[in-house]
Length: 206
Ligand SMILES: Cc1cc2nc3c(=O)[nH]c(=O)nc-3n(C[C@H](O)[C@H](O)[C@H](O)COP(=O)(O)O)c2cc1C
Image (tube, rainbow, N blue to C red; front, side, top):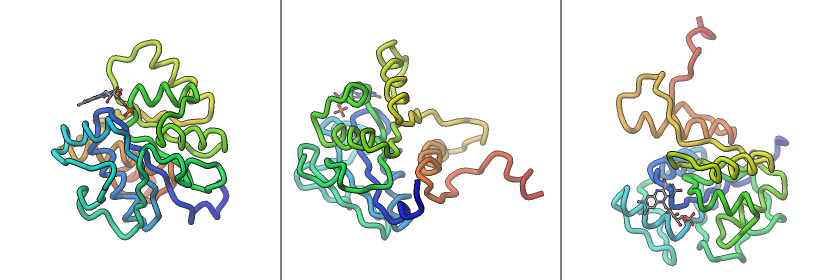
């Protein structure tokens, strides 16, 4: 990535896989970094957000305050059916996109270039423009179809970063597990964060 990408916005797509807390933490970290983030949310994601966070969101009248105080960065929301949004076009420049969490359905669509909502369209644009695209899938167990789709998107240039928190840092809270995954996403985006203790840090500093 060239240096001037540091002023470009990020794109976040939230889909209907389990793991809504990862999405909210990611938005917090990006907004706290002061960067602008464009957000789009699939219809199924709204169902999962209600189930997992007890938050009812309106996709047609979305208000980011439902997620609490996110930070000084601008959050620009686009309805999932708004193909006229800037992020639906390759001429709209971004510093990269994250789909978090990424359902197997959205993964399949991205793997096959099927763009029936703004999440999959924006992801398709990131692939065709050879920009950073990070997919955070969550499903278990995985079928051969899921695995082949992950390989297909990886071959097309995406980074598959499964929501698989590690336990080697001895997590004490759910927050620790959420932070582990979000830290790895932010590392891929080049966003400074101290969400988790980095392995080997003492060895570097001693
Ligand atoms: C509570 C709940 C949890 C779900 N968890 C997952 C999941 O972890 N992974 C997944 O691929 N789909 C999951 N689904 C199913 C997806 O929401 C469903 O396949 C949907 O069509 C995905 O649409 P989207 O990709 O447009 O968001 C879940 C659905 C619900 C209601």
